[in-house]
Image (cartoon, rainbow, N blue to C red; front, top):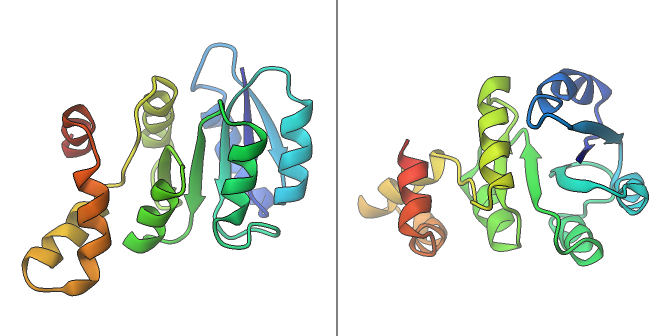
Length: 163
């Protein structure tokens, strides 16, 4: 299985690649530094099983890059990778079709688990969206979007998120 890792920082790609190779026995990491390069490489991967897109890299144009990748390869799960831990970024990414949102603050071993979860057909919603929901219950209106995202999760997805 090919895992496409698209991030405009080579150091991030170099740091993540060894972890991604451990996601599955036959995992091979294919790297790209922009959305355009990612789309081209995705087209050339006969065994593309997972795509990881940096939220803020050349060509992404917000979540338009996610939409372009999903349109080009609708059966391949896409996970968004980001330096942002803003709940709205995670919420909007998942609403736009991403199967998960991974903050760059996450440890490598945890990323492996998240990606295995996504490859098993589940979604990964970062725990900080729960904090966003908690803020809403205390009267903070900025959390409205996460309530809708959490309400759309299945019981199993909520159980996994709680873990």
